[in-house]
Image (cartoon, rainbow, N blue to C red):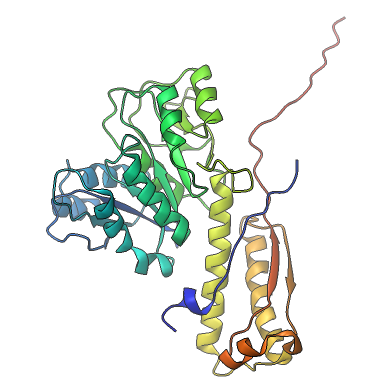
Length: 353
């Protein structure tokens, strides 16, 4: 059994219906830096230590600062091993692969590329491919000063339900909005909305309402002022998918991640603490009880899910090959996870007299 993820396989799919502390998953930043150790993931809990290792003005240093300023308590960092000043697509892919052990153990739940923007689509496609394969979310942004129409064109080159594109209108912004947004998301409970929440970033110029509409039509989220409190807010929580059957909103993906990781972790704990689970209908009933306990807990966990159904197989219905391999197959779980109210239309009639 090489890993829990291989032993307890949960193939999650999102079906759209008609009409640890305060950090929920750890983010990872991958990019160029001054660190000596290349392509070697390291988890940091202190920004000062991270900046000493990687440099404050490097892409990793800027991105990590943005993530910590948005409340993360820990952050994984990979310094890309690159032969030149700009990494190649293959070098980015190799650096991302080093995170795999931390993804399969549910340590890393989201990734961004430091200082790599939408004008480098081939590099971002490697990020999207890694995220899709390993079911982690990712955030991307664009070079400062990019027009709304060009941002939408760039976003269309990345088709992924795991990705979130965040845009700003400040040509003088020198931070990393993708890392800031990813860090912010990691502090939100998976049941909570991402759109209309405040991100800490030194953006001081904003898109017009028409530009925001253009961006959101192109599945790009903007940062904007929603009220006069000196904070900037995400306009939406759209994913980068171009396919209507895929998850349209990132909060749906986070809920799915949360449900899968809780089921895998709880079932792994049950197997580790139980010396013998009978491979028959009696043993299957105990496993069903463990699944039910996890889902019941999630119902009360900020209402991550509203209801569920579990269908357990009978021993007689399990293929002989699965029985020989001692693998329990045929479990079916249906979970209903409510979406989020993102707008309102309220007819108002005023009778004047």
